[in-house]
Length: 166
Length: 149
Image: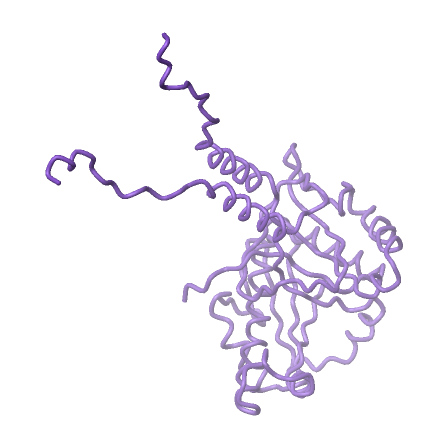
């Protein structure tokens, strides 16, 4: 009792679990934030008045008519086709007919949005691949690396002419 | 020298005192990087996938239109944070558009987030309404599909 050699020290706070607490905070935050789906495909709708005029002067030989049925089956000019394989046909059509081509798209009211989006995706992809090939041929670099004037040239040569019929 | 070998020298372990600091740094990184969405989506939806999706550029102001299933299983349209029917979409979008600044009104994009199984009838009607009120730039939201072929 008298020889109090060892003085009792109050033990400090055990901080080994602060790492665990911060993990919990991080996981809580990751779980509760709703991450925004930022990606998508930009499209331009035609203005309202032009529809009546456009139906008049249309050369049917330069029109490729795509139709989606209720079950999501694609027909090109009344002939059945497979959405995954139409890219080659589309590209041929666009390149052969040139800037006066028209791709007409008609969708049945009961067709599902996923099929329609898939088709739009293939159309956009065809245009992109054509423009990439042309830009490599003319300027030696892909479309995305071209300057504004070069892009304008390519857009003039291969414009996107898709018409949706409701 | 021989007797002193009782105390075995051990290599000191890694000092974990700064581990919480690292975690907080990661947490702050996430807080800065995520784009917080200021409206809750009240309909259930899953957007389609595509290969041609691009990131949205920030100079556009957006109005979000969600089309999905509500709790009763019917298709429901939600514009920004208000639920509405098809007929009301035109007026709602016009109102939202009018509340934006002049500059934002020129650079307006309508972000269309529709569920995969939505009937095209509703989507086409919606597009007709948008054409009527002059909101011509639309964007189909989708996730990216990695190329399998």
